[in-house]
Length: 158
Image 1 (cartoon, rainbow, N blue to C red):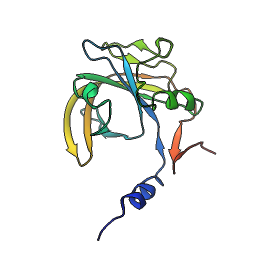
Image 2 (image 1 turned 90 degrees about the vertical axis):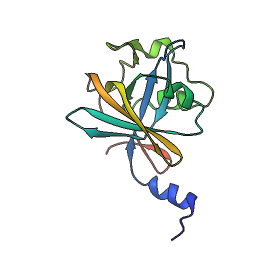
Image 3 (image 1 turned 180 degrees about the vertical axis):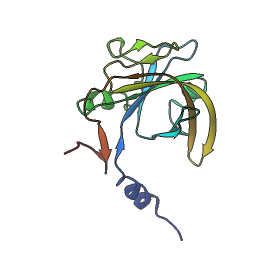
Image 4 (image 1 turned 180 degrees about the horizontal axis):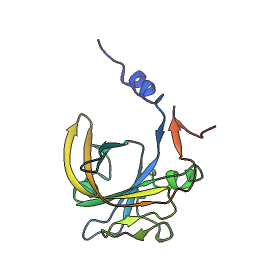
């Protein structure tokens, strides 16, 4: 069976996902962030999560060299924040959007939850790199409904 890549992408887009901003500040760089919707839990014991990064992403080298990162889960009112960190060529974190967390990585305190992670391992996954992080700190803030993305646009719970 041969799959048309555009049809496959559209079909995958039917699965609603949450939206996150992954943040880090590898040594020698300013804090940076990138919007993703490829986030998932892996294990409760040990506490592991994963996200994936496209191999040709302009942020590949930055995240590849980061030993720690944070996953910041956005709420329904944060589309602008999502859009800001989804722009190509502009991933420097606005100082008004973050504070430094317990592990030294930037976290976004206005988001629903932030998971501070130590990079556990990476795996090649076709045209993406799969990053597994061990959650070492967590700030659960319960700021309302999640920001959802489905079929190419933002959605809300009804």
